[in-house]
Length: 205
View (tube, rainbow, N blue to C red):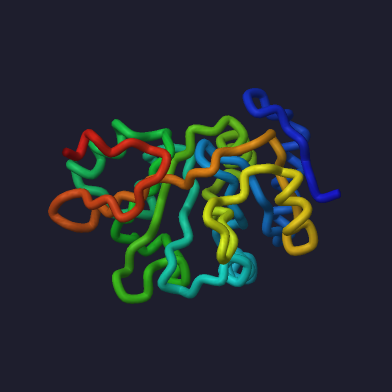
């Protein structure tokens, strides 16, 4: 059994350590977020990133997202002006992914090959926050929506059934949502919503 069953509000430290140990050995894992479940691997894990792209059947033009603990960590990987910072401060932590110009700290393979941008988010999930704290660095991630599926996978038993042999661990905190994050592109003169998801965007009207 690949699953590590954790409490959604008070994830057990020893179980977070187990998940981190797998990541440090090059694992690709499934983890719950404040939106849907996601695939994740370590930031520097090139093979892990390639496995995630193969599972999702997406190419290098598809942004993988960096899961960060807070805005100060996010600022290491993205160039953030004052207006973008104010917006992100109001929306984080939460179910939003931001597209921003990448800094030199971001491996080239994580950047959009033409635009040199990167997707980042600060999840409002105690499980993810505990995992990031234990790991000490961001995670690379992608929505767990398989090719041809209308919605992301949300039930750990179904994830285990369909992907149990293709991933190295499933952090199970119970059923997730059927919605991905809202994606906001902050590289232009005004914020642009490029994917409507769980996070509301009425503040942009």
